[in-house]
Length: 488
Image (cartoon, rainbow, N blue to C red; front, side):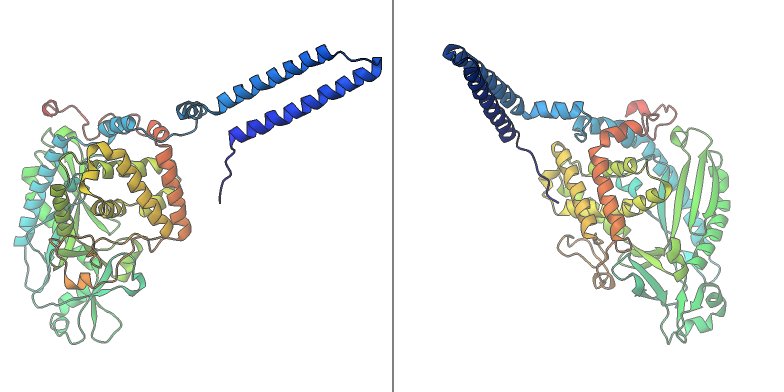
């Protein structure tokens, strides 16, 4: 819908002209009535009155024209005084970033080191704890993934994601099949045996525990629920073997949350875990697919369909390393992604529970990271200098709004976007030939439109949202005073 804007210059000119004509008519009518009443007219007095009227009109006209042609800074001052939002300023964003978004490198480094030491011991024990050749086992390594390891974590360094690759029994061959009902949506697959596969028939115990018939004669499907139960029990047994040396420094616990997530809890006893931060480590069982691509159990309603989600940890880390070497040393690309997450978090703090959940799903961290990477790969390197941070934030938000309005955000790796990805990022052939995935395919048009409008509102009113949110926190990830922080 087009909006009509009033031209003040023409408007006031017309008002003054109309009033002038009316007053002139009034003057001549009054003069005529005076002539009829006494039969004579006072020409001198009439001329003086006319000159007064003309001077009064001229003064009014020039005054109104002066007021309507004030500089733009004056108008912005009036709008600000009237409470009209003018958007965030760089000084405000910088201050908020330093106080509430940026994590302490010291605290994050100590936390990552402690998590890596504990997980490495747990995986080492799990690799040695092999019952037979026809059972699952730890492969012996682990992969640290997520924002804590990619330097764009916000909030607090209290949550870490670790992929634990598994080794399938020798001789068992599983074929990934794209999930038809989600074609074009999230990257989901099923793992099935071939029709002529004899291995499930020869290993009845493993088949009864982990495999189920797919409806087709002789075809079995490998489901994530049984793998998650086995993984939780094995992790519990491995944790018991390494608990003693670590519990001198922190309390350890392991839980299976809603049957979908294995969470390792670390509660510190001393300053070894810096600043007494309680941490949670999400242990994710992963099946290798080839070329450092993994399959992990899906979550939510998709679990009942025996679906697996595709992860690209090595490719994403290699791509971020390639971009870091290409961008200038004073690049603001990581800060932009952190501030984009902060806009998301502040914008959803006043929503009700249902709306907040949908807001967080549409603008999930992976969605924001995908949009950020796409825009980063299609923008010249010099444009990401620190001096252009406000322009890049505006571009990122515009890119997201346009994607929400077009109902499309393509997965960066699934389907192999050859126009953006460098040749150094290798992908399996089955991934390159997959139909490109739209990360917003499962959401309705109404939900995406609401999120787009809310996103614009959050950016425009960000100063007010900053004042409302997190007033009690001064430095995330710092907690109690640590003797090492003074050296930062």
